[in-house]
Each structure stands twice: as C-alpha cells, then as structure tokens.
Length: 331
Image 1: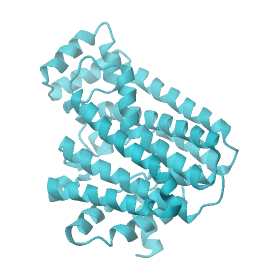
Image 2: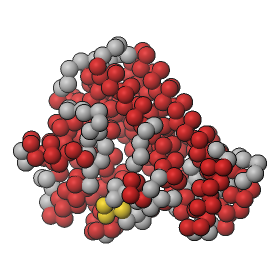
Image 3: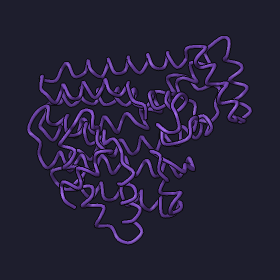
Image 4: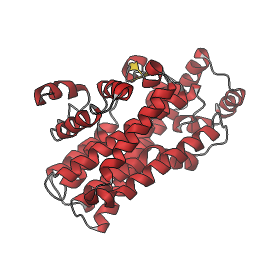
C-alpha cells in the first residue's frame, strides 16, 4: 500500500483537526504487521483497521517522547504495540457486552462470531508483546503489563458491580483508571522513557496519562447518555442497559429528589427505552450531567498541570491541545 493511499485511509483514523503527521508511521506499521496474518485472522484484523479509530494511544506515546528528543523507531514501535493492545481490548469488550456495532460499523464478533473475535484479540496481544520483547523495548514492557492486568481487573470489577445501587465515586475512579487511565499512562511513560527522560519527568507523564484517562472515560460516559446513535456509532444508553454505573448516574443517585427513584430502577434490572428517556431527563434536571462534565474538566486541569514540569516545546503544546479537545468530543 502506498503512503498516499494510507494517508487517504487514515483520514478517519487520525485526529484530523490537530494534524499529527507522525501517526502515518504508526498506520504504516499497523498495516504491514496485520496484513502478514494468515487466513481468517488476517480478514478480522483488516476489518478492524478499516473501522478506524482516533489513535490517541500512539499519539500520546510519540509526543511524550518527542518532548525530550527527536522521533525514533523505538517510539514508533511502542506506539504500534500500544494501539494493538487497545484494539485487542476493544474486541474483547465487544464480546463481553455482546455489542453489534462500534464506530457505526459491525463489530468483529457480529461478523465472524465470538470464537474468531477472541482469537483475533489474542493475536493482537501476542503481536504487541512480540514487538515489546525486543531488547531495546523491554524496559517499557512493565508499563504495558501493568496496563493489561489493570484492564482485566477493571472488567471483572465492572461485571461484579452491574446494576449496583451502592457504587461510590472512589470505586468508579478506581475502575476507570483500570479500564482506561493506566494504559494511557503506560503510553506516556513509555514514550518519555524511550527518549531518556528522567524519573521525575516519567512520573509526571504517568499522572498526566491517568488524568487524561479519567477525563476521556467520563466524557465517554456522558456521551453514552446524552449523545446520538449516529455520532456514537452505537446505541445510546448501552452502558446503562448493560448495568454499568457511570459518574453521571452516581451523581444522580446522590440527588435527594431522584436518588431513591433511580435505585429502585437499578434494583429491578429493568430498563427500557422509556426508562432511558426518563433517566436522561432526570440527569438534565438534576444537573448531574453538568456536574460530571465539570469533573472531567477538573481532571484535564490536573493533567495540564503535570505538563508544567515538562520543558516547553511544540509537542508539549500539542499534548495540551489534545487534553482540551477531549472535553469537546462528540463520539
């Protein structure tokens, strides 16, 4: 595939508004690696690539490193590994949630079945660690191992708390750190480490990644309740229908007017379209969505404060701009 064709194909997968040309190197390697797969695995991997994605994790890896030095091949390889780990986790999430669409397109499990989807996810994990196992990248592997362990724990904890009417804000933040934040932190730490950043700077990037992850997931949770099927590429209210209690709902449960009403709905495990609409109206009336949005903004402020310890550069500025763009997402 030519670089011109890849540029065309990646227009929907990169963050166009911010124009990060370095992501083309990541896209190139993703296509090269996944096109080498055999048979059905190759078909499922190519289908996944065509479904697009924002490539936030590669971008964080690259630009965290480029805050300290020029782009190098190790940063690109770590970025590719990070994206494949993310892709694998999405496939497994879709199987668990029985999702039929993602980004407006059929999921791997809905096209090829759960068995093929599980094996595709496992293949992506294996390929990611095949890259990370090279001597120069071994020092970053511990970050990604921690991230995968955390994602598994987060998924188990989420399943155990389905339709819970007692979940609190601290539990929620622990879960979204496990499911989202720690992988983003691993990306930032890996990029900085591969550019020979110091221990204090690497730790600053860990905190940056965690807070970016908090804001990203809170925004996702707000959009799940207030977005549109067209923009989300999946049914509105999917998380709530699956019993996943998110921050806006936690704030609604704390509301003196609506709290007991929502708890009764959760205990019943019965939520239909009318119920979703009523909950949405309650979220608006109680300002619970607004409160969740404020919390996401506070997380972004903390993330940007972490970058105050990083030397000024165009790449630090790009990461600050990326942080702000998270709050403006519609999908």
